Image (tube, rainbow, N blue to C red; front, side, top):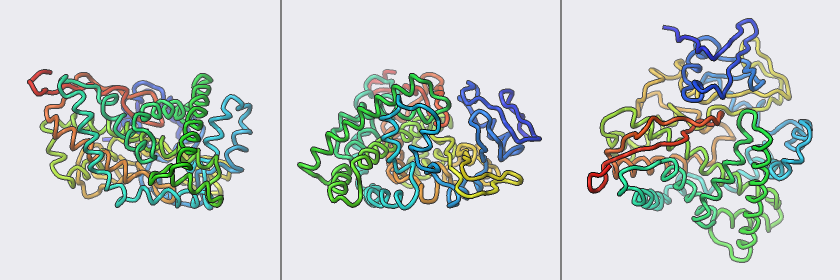
Length: 423
């Protein structure tokens, strides 16, 4: 039976235009009914609230990620594009960081920067971190196990990836939560219609973050190690690969990307698994089972629901929808991952499904450089958590934050049988 159109969604079939406020509470808490309706009725829509055409299909998103007619770099460059939007003096520090970000560039600049940092994130290098991640996850659980309850976003999902990426960068582990706070302020600028207060907070945090990186980079010049910041600093010192601004932008991007989405995905995954009922350990009995479960969680309820691309050459993205250079297109990753044309029973949780795939990490040259690390962190986090606390259960109905195009929980309050049986 064809899914009903959600009451909060308006669609004009004559123009392909859709009105759907991304802050609508029902959509924030469960965007998937809207996506299901789009799959059957409007796989390519002009989302008026964002002012761009969007694709909801898996094959369409996967193909466009790899199409060189589309990319992340803004036509004319980041600074020129931002200048055209009006006075941004209140965002000078934020823009300085963004202008040199790997995420905002295309080859050859993108190739130069990505090659430099890629070796630290390949699977064989990341796998060496497994014992450290297991130990950190266990220490975090030690901190709340005796209470018989926890708020897992705060107590587990946030500190784990923050500490891991801080250590990889060669920064003090205790700086992790400060990095998270700066990152949270900055990523609000990627959300729908941030306000002036959001912008000023993002700018202040970008300035503080950049100063923090410069200070630690200076220390790495005096006493280098085998960490990522030392690697970036050495590349700056040789005068060939990194400018000072690129060093700062690259370090901040790696730190932000190294935890932001993983925090959301960890919370979403725990919620998904607990919703299945029964003993959660059945999903993580082996390393292989945990890996399959993580892939299904990434598909079913991912942490990022929209990623945009700029158009460099005229392209028809759907029948009758032709985009020109300077336009943008939105790829609806949360919708693509549940496309019934790509997955059987797409709304069901089925680890190890034969049609397992997802676009949660993107594809092509911008495929998430931290994907091996994120996968490992999620596998270890879930296995450690449920092995240690098999009686884990929700203490309250979790709610998602109003942070579209991200998708993650505000809180994840749980309870479990403690060592003495207390809850």
